[in-house]
Image 1 (cartoon, rainbow, N blue to C red):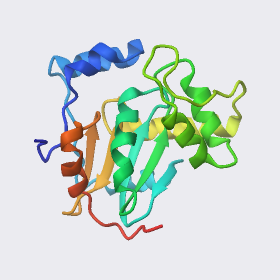
Image 2 (cartoon, one colour):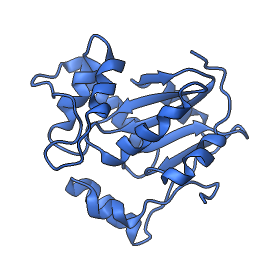
Image 3 (tube, rainbow, N blue to C red):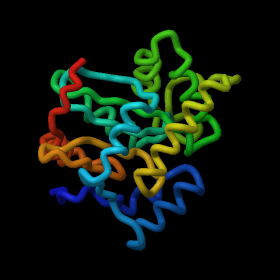
Length: 205
């Protein structure tokens, strides 16, 4: 079961992350120096900033879930897989950042600069391969526009404001009207419990 305060990042995350930066952060969690962060209604600016970040929407409904993700993140991909059965009643807003691999920025840019970012996002996830040097399935852009770099930088600022800089980071308004932040991918068996805590925001689409 997942406590109301969120989900701790398990030690397996430390063993499997790809960058030294995330490895260090994961190690901090493993030894108990950090844990899943929880925001409260006293921090409405965080949710407002998420709403104004660059994101790619999937699903329809007035229960909105922000997922800060890296295109090469296997745990973000787990959240994507688990989210698909909820698209009828929930809207997932995928907020791309590029912090894991040298190819992350090009893959994020390929989504942002695509004629249909949602199609590009699904290409990345539906062709995700859990193997070093492959991971996200979309071909990275060789040249990234200044506007796209700025969007990615702004999204990374949002990630920093949620606490420990790890992906996935999940942000939503709960049924009690408080902002909740989950660091790491919930276990598959716990995903429905997380979804049950998401409140309505009136942001149907």
